Length: 501
Ligand code: BES
Ligand code: MN
Ligand code: ZN
Image 1 (cartoon, rainbow, N blue to C red):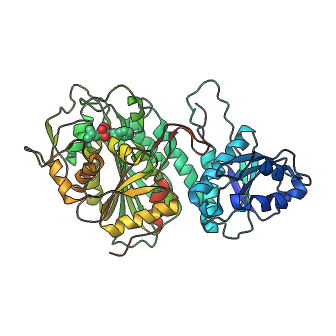
Image 2 (image 1 turned 60 degrees about the horizontal axis):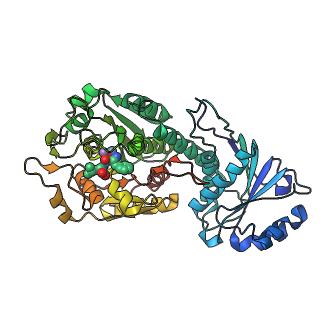
Image 3 (image 1 turned 30 degrees about the vertical axis):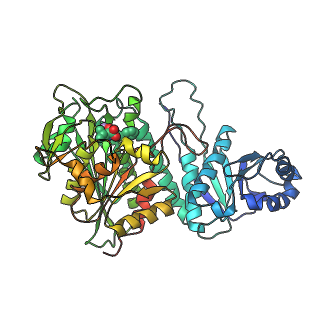
């Protein structure tokens, strides 16, 4: 097994581009700025860029690459690579991230150890946000998901990157770099197959990922989980010979108010077979990513602590396999969770909401006042929002608005869906407090309504990442596999503090 990623050294320089002492320099160009850029680099490149524009070989569209023909005269860098930004008004955080990752792949393919990025296109975002994103994306780009290949391990990582900028607001390089590393680490866990990542191993690896100054962690074993009467988590775990775990992380930032505590709850199903309500064979292998929510909240906590944000935060991640073993919960069984609510399990494949029910209850028990859960919860959200947008649910509206604006700053797409009381009817069971699988109509909404029963009366939000946690195909800015979605958003939520009550 080789390294899945490397974190390059990243520095900032105010030197002119001609003096950039790097093997390859990447220059972003907005579409509306392409002709001006061609004139600006005429001295160094001759008519190379202009004639590429004339031929239509390069149009500076988003993520378009043009490798300059000649080494630039009088420049120290041996290679110049242009990356298109599209119209300047469209250049936001996500566009910058994609441009950097796309161009950095060219550098990796050319095996350039020391590269430069010219911070030239301001786009629509602040310098601080832009530089943070550039640093984050340089780390994201240095990722390889073929860690288990014993052959063809031709992976090359960038060792050092220099951001050339005239801006003085460059303190965000460090936070961006650390966020990139946190996201990469989460992606490694999410990509791991079920046999390499049992609940016990996930608990250990997640705890070690979160072992940064300021975070205390605790792993609850099956005995402790039993003593807490978490019958929903235990009910899912019964079908497996692997025991469940529950990871708890706590962070008390300096200067944090004692009255509010962020509670992050992540789904940690290390493999979801569906249980006795077995999933079809086709595509079941995907279900190794069913702990993506859990990995995301752990990665977010790690960056929250690194940035020493002045808040209190708790993460709770229930972890188990969902297997159809001899002791497995059977359709029709009734489980009783730690909160006291009883659930008729009419479908053992609706297991995420069960373990999250106990997880949400426990986060509140530990003092969380503002809850967010993150889960690959429903196939229905993939039908509704595709693989582009994360489903957002919750209450009250100011808390949801707080999360929406954080996602916007993070450059991640979320969309709110309703939780009208009328949907609750579908959750009715004849013999228990509720049903875990209320049927096909509005499947993502009824799953969220189920979670709401465990979230109490305070602020709570649910992010359904079943569509966004995993990329089915590789893109220039995103390898196939785990995306690490919502980590950035959770960090931004924490940065934003708590909305006025
Ligand atoms: N982990 C799945 C949801 C999922 C589906 C994630 C597709 C990623 C891609 C979840 O545990 C599940 O099986 N949900 C069921 C719920 C149903 C039985 C009510 C579903 O969505 O089919
Ligand atoms: Mn399932
Ligand atoms: Zn699942």
